[in-house]
Each structure stands twice: as C-alpha cells, then as structure tokens.
Length: 338
Image 1 (cartoon, helix red, strand yellow):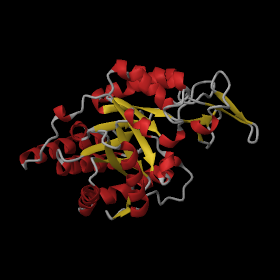
Image 2: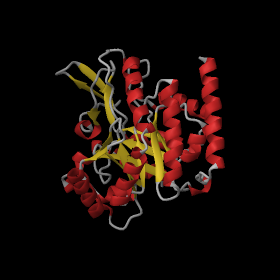
Image 3: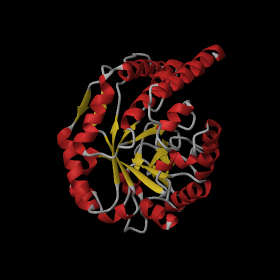
Image 4: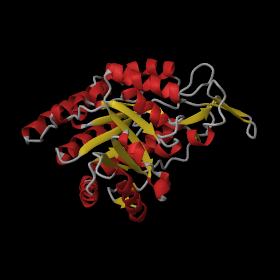
C-alpha cells in the first residue's frame, strides 16, 4: 500500500510539472471571497412551487447549490432535467431579486454496477464508473456548456467516497484539468467527508470550496451530529493541509434515529413536536430521533466563525421553517453571524 501511494504521489508531482510547463493557469488564492458564506443545497423539485421559497431567507443565504437535475454517465455525457431546472431558476430569481447570491449547479455521476451488499465493493465499482467519465475528453466540455447556457457561477460535485487509490488519482487529475479550464470564470466546488480527504495539494489549489459534510455521525447515546462529535472530528481536516478559508462546515437540517437506521426526518415537520432536549419519538416505528435545534446550529455556526472556516453549508433548504420564524435554523445562523 505504501509503495502504491508513493507511485501516486510521484505521478501527481509529474502532473504538476506538466501542467506548469504547458501553461495551465493556477487559480489565485486571492479570488476567495472574504464574506462568511452561508451555502444551502436546494433540491430543485422541492421548489417547483414558488411558495416553498421565502425572500427573507436570502438576506442570510449567500450561495445556492442546485441539486438533483444534472447527471453525467461513464462516457462523459451530461443529462439535465431542463424543465425542472428552469422552473427552479425562475422561482429563485423572483425571491432573490437584486441580492448578490452565487448559484452553482451540482452534477451527480454514475452509480455502482456491483451486485454486492458490501459497501466498499459498491464504492469501488462506483469509482471505476467515475474513472471512465473523468478520463473522457467531453465531460468537461459538456459541463462548461451547461454553465454557460444558464449563466451559473460555478459547478459542484458530490462524489463523496472515492475509496481506492485509482479513484483518487483519476478524481484529483480531473479536478486539476477542469479547474484549469474554468479559470476565473466559474468556481469549482466539492462535497467532502471528514474521513475521506485524499486530495492532492495541486487539486486543492484548483478547488474553490470544500463543503464538509459534518453529519450522519453519532455520539455514544445515538444522538445525530452533536456539536461535541463534529467539533472533534473537524480536527481531521487540519491534518490534510486544506485551508479552512476554503471549507464550509456542514449543518444538518434533518435528524436520524438513535439506532442509525435509514430514516431522515426534516426539521420543519417536527419542530413543534420536539421535547426540551431536542428528541422526537416516532411510536409508529418505535424509533427516537435527535434534532439539531436552533441553539445547536448557533453553537456550530459560532465554532465555524471562531475557527476560521469560510462559512457553513446547509443540507438542505426546504427542511427548515422560514427564517422569519423564531424556531428557524436559518435564523439561528443569521443571528449568530450578525
């Protein structure tokens, strides 16, 4: 394993030299916006009705990451649900008005082709499909064409789990190549797991923002994404030499059951049903859920400010009450950063 990693490190260095020799433009670090960012994933099919959006929320939100309408396959072909995307953009335009809000488009790649029930085997298969796409000459071109057509500010990737050396090698090289093509015209942004951060320093140079997914983790009581748990885990990113001014700290606007089972309950549906400690018991399935309440969200936001993160990231927008509601999680963020 050490030998393989040494080869990858050597090859990455070679790529760095080649890109420098042939005039690949590096993204200057001073392009990073100094504002504290509040980035929110917005699932496009959830905002087809304009009533799902609230204008006041965009006094707090600085960035919208549109999700669920753009994909690519292992040949580099891009598919966009244009009707859903265009309705979402039209509705957003109405509520945002003349505010300075960056809107980026998230692209999801091909899935696993493995029949195995083993998670790592599934991720290895998913990685192989992504590798094919990343080596395709047309994927980057197709992505940029969509960004240009809809005048997006940048592109996002939610490739969460490259678990093999070959997957990381292909992904890092793709980010460098795409980042060079995007230049200063568009931002390049990626979702990242705190335990899965094998980005090369060259790739880090080209990525404008890492959205750190600090959720789907539990403490000893089964509480989901407590402040204490994620604050401790966040130290891992400091060992990866990724500048915190390029990292947003992920906040879950949903809860998971204390047994870690596959349920995701949005905050808006249960905000008025929680006990004084943030728990909700669903007797119909005999499971207990613990939510990040406004005080927890405020504590995490203050932590992001104090530690020097670029901002916070929300998964996801329609899980919350309007920010005009005293129980709103977004309001807790806004009140903290004021």
